[in-house]
Image (cartoon, rainbow, N blue to C red; front, side, top):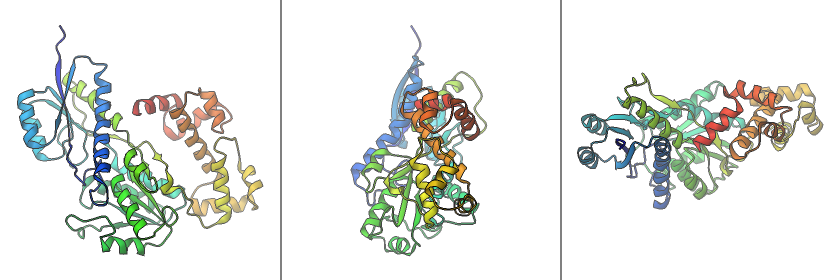
Length: 408
């Protein structure tokens, strides 16, 4: 008879507006929050279960990370290993006393004191900034929870990216000025003044999807058009929240399933006596889930708008700068200058970026072979696609497909 090992997964179920995977109750329906909490925690749980299916000796059990309930659970069930949201010192202390090996999946604490697999919040901010920059935004703003670690890190990454262009995004609320139980709704006069005062068009990155949904509702109440006046971008890609919002929200994708799988794999290694990693494993975001809230080009130069639209409309075709010039009546030198001055890239850089995004979409969503993907994404050959992939993504197309399938 095989010996089964008791493995616990410990996740929050209460609605905490400052957790990275939950928005704010203000301005959202309870249904949105219940869906968001459920699917975020379930994403990590799915990853743990995916790993456990290949290790039949694991007997999984769930506990909420409420201190009183968790303390009773750990004494009664005596788990040997735990994958947990270590979101407070009290939770950490309870798990320490249990004697179990623990892997943390929450970035709430600056130092959880246990091996961790968490999202790279700095990278999330940088990816958000890059998306707005690629849409032509040079004015940007951030809405978050000052003093909450994941929000502060996402703001830091966001600002870092814009600072390379000499821009500093404004943020709401400012550190030290956030009121207790601050509402992110049209009832908050300070928020309404801040939104009205922003020079339009502007791109706003919200630290999570729940908050982005609240800002979308507030903009609608103020007759601020999304995305025409304000392009809104969230993070975590909680699909229910994003699709329920009006308009549907673009969001930075994070693979909760991947976090769960890697955390379970790390726990397995720890239980076999392998040493713990010296630092947290940081999982980068998976790009942007593009929806209507950022579906706009914030570019005033008409020639550049025509050129970028042409490139994006021909993501499937093998095109070059000459093809753009047949559509846009300017010299090559002037077109290159406009791209460099306004978008900080060349026309060829944008063509390659759009083709690569198309290839990534096909690798993720279809079963086309590499040659078919290359043809459908504007590359002359599968060899050329592989070269570009290695340069830009530091992996082969096949590795990207396997990773995306695992993440999904």
